[in-house]
Length: 415
Image (tube, rainbow, N blue to C red; front, top):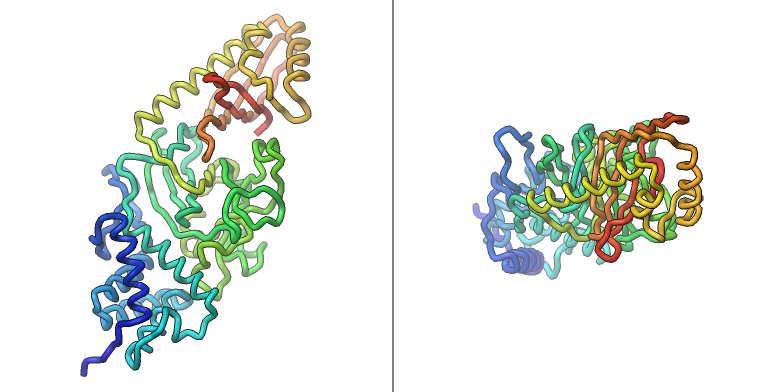
């Protein structure tokens, strides 16, 4: 006997969301086994993304759009067998069940949930649908990934505006797309300024440590990866706060709404477990933007060459023991820990007076452009310094800023 469904409130709302997104992007084409990720070279690692969960969810929502409600119910129930704590799927299942009896006035009518909860789940559905309906740029990567250091195997780029985290591999210096995941971010949005503002920071950060499940509460999921907020640039801008992590979700849920954290970037536990295998403590960059900008290989190569030459000229001028040549690379707004440009100038001139020769070797250079500020670069390297009266080695980080069409160092310190 064929079940009778009443396609009204819930289905119409989903239909409106799907049509609006698809119309804006110019197409409806989507299948469970096809996703619009960038093409992979044959030798590139193959990973399926977006997740099977999202493919199943979107398939069921598109079946609602097509009025194939029995199939939609079958897919939702299959999804829940795999992910029994996926709240959005439970909400849709409840509405589909109620639609057998009478029309629904709105999505979530069967759940008895609050309007705030329903709104959160609608936003999650929208974010997940958008990923499937929108193609990522072909043959382009996030513009921030100018140069990996050889030991950096992966980079993470977060788009808070689209609730998405992207993983790229260092393929002999070229960023290669590997996977992407749905994420939650700050309740109050992005661009964190101060402690407790419930915003996610925007900038270039690095994974600093790993906290296994045994060291954190259930609220943070299966593990957590703290990142280096506030970074050197944040502190110069007067930003503060702490405890920004990549972490999972409580065991009683599969995911959280797009805007649900106190500033952290939150992934489903299965996604975090996959991602965590590729994160390197002290090495993996985490670039957080509210809107990813993309660049092709030619653009990145040009920027890499330009910045590489600047760093080499700086190194050469330091070796020359010519203080004027060396200091011309620094902005008058330069800051270092405990120093400004004036004190830096004085110190370096005094030091050079005692030098008869200087040799500097740089290795492991990485270059990342700063999200939201195309005129700011973060450059990190290993420095091997030797002179007639001193030898040392350190990992150094510089921030280069474009001032009056000239790149200048605006910050320098130990990384």
